[in-house]
Length: 133
Image 1: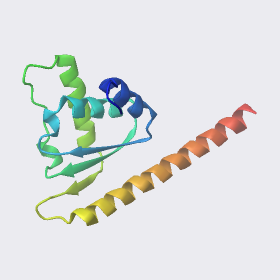
Image 2: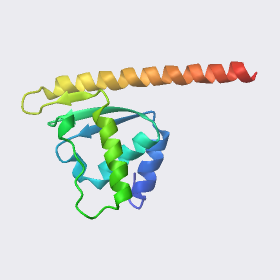
Image 3: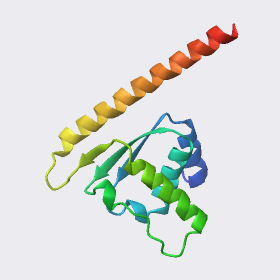
Image 4: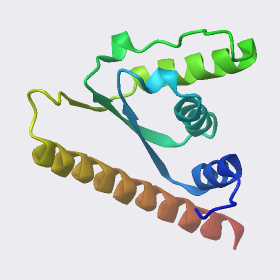
């Protein structure tokens, strides 16, 4: 992104074009409107997601209603967060874990998922071609 770009336009467009989302969920994640908006959009567009729970257990993640967000948005965010909590992800404890080992493990998971998604896309393209020609 460059200065002058509209943040939501760029983020929404990028999420629409991506194959895989990675959400790093931390103790303050649910305090961020932007993080919750991105997570909701990933879930609503049915993208595969790898949640990374960093210094937090999935059961500890909650949306806080501070009165600044419309109830419809709060429900969107709550639904997305609940879906992320029940998606198999990775966990990292910054007080006990080795960051470089974790990054290697996370990179492997991301690459494996992308390879799998590319394989699914190739199969769908082949099936479409065979069925229509």
